[in-house]
Image (cartoon, rainbow, N blue to C red):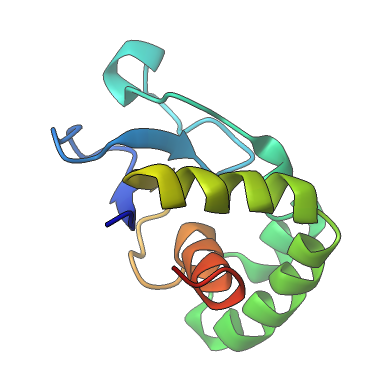
Length: 119
């Protein structure tokens, strides 16, 4: 069964990660491409710069961030559906740089895909 996993970019790559997809607009600071082990980097599925800066990883803004981010994702349906298809084909891991493992765009993107394109 296919699944979407989440992993912080600074964590070691695991053998069960499958396809590793960086879902941040910016490359994780201080991380080399070799060490990151990223297979794809579709920047178009990351939050806009304005939204990312407004959110600023503030958990108090999480609900509103998700609402706004989901609206952005609606406008990028083709790119998001490609990610959903990859998840149906096998395990994918959304890689992110944020310190907060609960309130980040990778977690929101996973939630959006799982609700919009259930298995």
